[in-house]
Length: 315
Image (tube, rainbow, N blue to C red):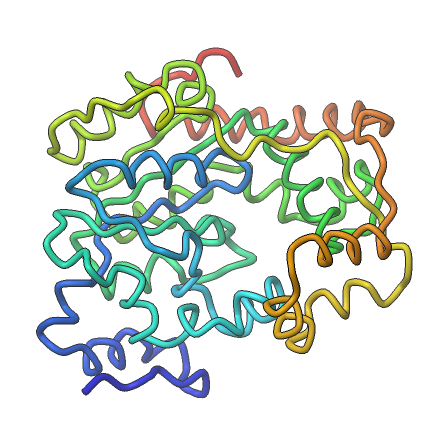
């Protein structure tokens, strides 16, 4: 009988606990395909596209963050940290229930490529699934960092003005330092186990990019319908401020999570509108932040291109 992995266990023994808790049937659910990020680069869209392939079972929870340190996840994303699939081995495997016969079982957690803010992730994945395939989605690094800022700002995780945030909060620079992130995985996986997808290529040459991905996985190509390949998760042109200082605390609380599940969507939207003040992102001057990032990340982009053995055109 499966045992839950208690949060009291240290992350150092998590993989051993997971190994012991799995029955033979459960082992057929172990994921072997990880889309590791990067944040704001199209991982949600890729998760949806991969899910269409008959030989791939993607997780029912797109971003379980199971291999992120419990304490780091609780601080960064308390809503997910309370969900069983983020820390309970049985609940995590249940994300692929029904996919036992699939050749690949995958998930897509962008926190898996946010070193050093999220440490030890690659090692934990390798300990559980040493033969796994890793897909790393990257986007023009300056634009990615700016989009990352706006996501965190909208979720009340960032309060600094944009240029100051780029200079003082390393998560934006580090997550766009693709060489730094890739090096964590190359320390545990062979290069042939890692495939890089360029977000701009996925957007503009979707069929070709996905066909290359399937070929790397050793799968037959998939004949997508136009609706299946539609653009997904486009970022809104607006963001929002908290109207009241306590909004973030309420939003991240377990009490609100329970209440929200019982409320109709239109009422949740009305409460959100009452608690926040929307504004157009285009009204904010991003030029200083972009100039700083371009200078800082230029050399790191070159290092990344050297690691993958090709230049990325159009960045």
